[in-house]
Length: 220
Image (cartoon, rainbow, N blue to C red; front, side):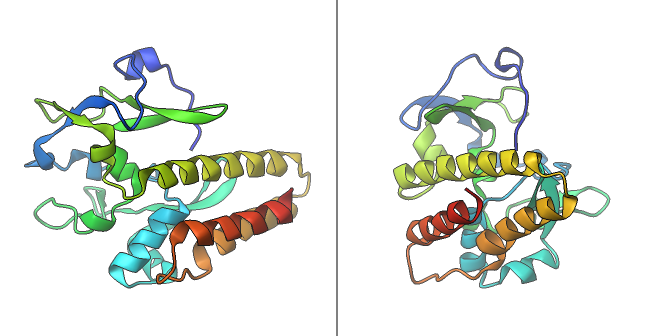
């Protein structure tokens, strides 16, 4: 999701890598689940998020769409996001005690929060969103530990590849005069990266690279 932000207003003014320490620790969110409510459509999922959810819960993407996920247009592309439900607009995976019921398989957005990413020409840095999490006091934690993601270098390379692919796709969409052509591009992304089944006995990143190559050949 592309956002125009002023880092001076929303962050502590620093940029971080996964090797750095950041003041984001929140005592395991004890007694607080504010970031799991009233998030609207902002918790957008990427293919690895869906892979983790499907593998961890033993459910297909279509099954997840029946109760926990929904589809919305993000920067011209149809992408899934976590569904907020009920009058309190709680994440569908939040249990009655206010704890995450999918914590081992939670999406990258949730793992990163309250950190954000700022993309540059050849990579990205993390930044701390200082107004997003009310839990105090905060303690210092290494970014890599906070992200809690195995094979972090592979994951970060994948995140950048996915970001760059979506940016290219957005440019392609902007060139179409016919709405039906734009819809076909968006539907291809949805089908290729989310609806098409994954092999959970195989490495995700290898499978993603194959899908990415097919997508780039199809579009570019």
